[in-house]
Amino acid sequence: MSAVQRKIVHVAAAVITRPDGNFLLGQRAPDTFYPGYWEFPGGKVEAGETPRAALIRELNEELGLDVQAAYPWITREHVYEHAHVSLHFFEVPAWKGEIRDHVHAALSWQRADAMTVEPMLPANGPILKALRLPRTMGITHAGEIGVAAQLARLDTALAGGLRLMQIREPGLAVDERKAFAEAVVRRCRAVGALVVINDDMELARHTKADGLHLPACRLAELDERPDCEWVGASCHNRAELEKAAALGLDYALLGNVKPTLSHPERAPLGWETFGGMIGKLPLPVFALGGLAANDLTDAKTAGAHGIAAIRSIWQG
Image (cartoon, rainbow, N blue to C red; front, top):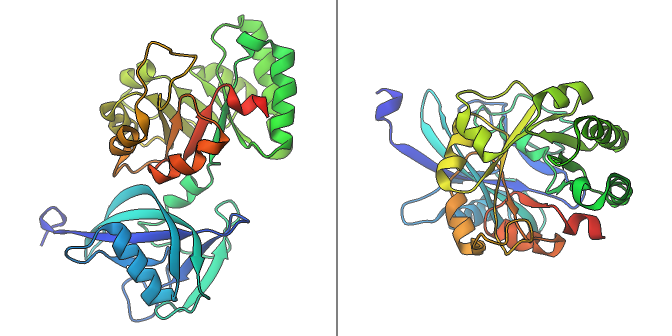
């Protein structure tokens, strides 16, 4: 039977995370497909089950865990020799009970940026890059508050743990924007933070930033992914999100979720519409628009990877 004719098997997969950022992997047993490969715990969604219900059941059966919190994250499809699977990933940051494994050959706590086990199950491998993305993105607005003030607030935010930055400064003169970007990248490099440049590949390459962020208008023009380690895009609807996914981008921003000073003319999406719009996408999506740190749980509950903000990030 060809891969096209196969029925899709739905699987719930858990990214079980500790407060230190480590997540749990299981090594497949010798008597299974891909023996010895590492995977995220979980299992098949049975008839009449939702992926969340399957996740809760499987983690109890396989690991003896009573799930206390499970946030929908991303959905990826993969065609194996023996099955076409659709993996529904959830972040599981809270549970009760001691881990007692009943199905894997071994378990291991890992970090996406410092993996010590391999190989990963093919369908699970791409998830590791997504897990390297911090949950909060700060977006600069030096053109509004001044370069010196922005850099001072950046220093404070980096000291407080911010690890993902987007440089977006269309209002600065070319030379000033170049100098500002160099200063931001230098500061971020010192603490291991990621930096993407908005809509300027030349500047991204000059500063050796980590990647490029595309405005929606630029996304619409592209037929292939730009050649950068990290590429994301701003989106306003499902069609744009699907194009970002089709191009293999690493993340997307979607907003505005709440009323915002940047675009007061736009009606906010609200969390319900936001969650419906990002469902079953294979890439992480940040919620944007009028958000602050205390919105992160609501964002995750709606299926977001995290939040992005222009103003609230710099007010702490």
